[in-house]
Amino acid sequence: MPTASEYDRLINNKWKDAQLPEPTEKQAISGAKALWRKATGRAFKGKVEIVKRKNQYTWFKRGTYGQDMVVNPCRYSHGHIEQGWQEIVHSIAHMAHHEQRPSERPHSDHQLNLEAMLTSYALSDKFKKFTS
Image (cartoon, rainbow, N blue to C red; front, side, top):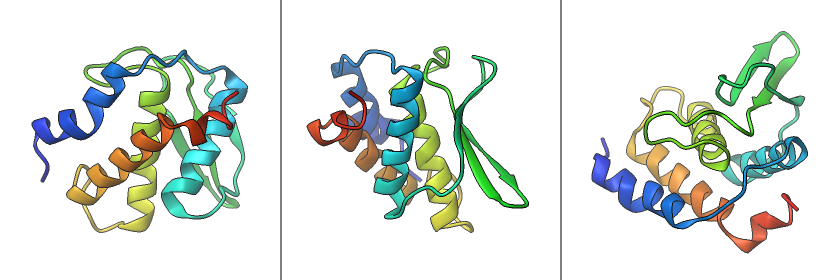
């Protein structure tokens, strides 16, 4: 199980150095789809919508006909997870990790590596084309 210092080194410190504006609803939706594709290697087939209440996390709704993603572009700061892109990346990393390794616990080494990869991607120039 990764330590807090590993999370700081691989993820949290990168966000502290980044100065990203809060995403618009359109940017959050297209960015979430791009992050999912990067994490899983395939497009997200469900519907992607914005949360109805601003205190919700980015999350998945699983239903009879598949799953939908609910994205929050401006989640209020909670502990070390800041609002905006950092929260979206963190939540998608959890969801993708659960889909890829359902028997593995959250915050495992694999989930840390996945979130670190998504963080680097979200802070890269390649990602900006989805969010401009």
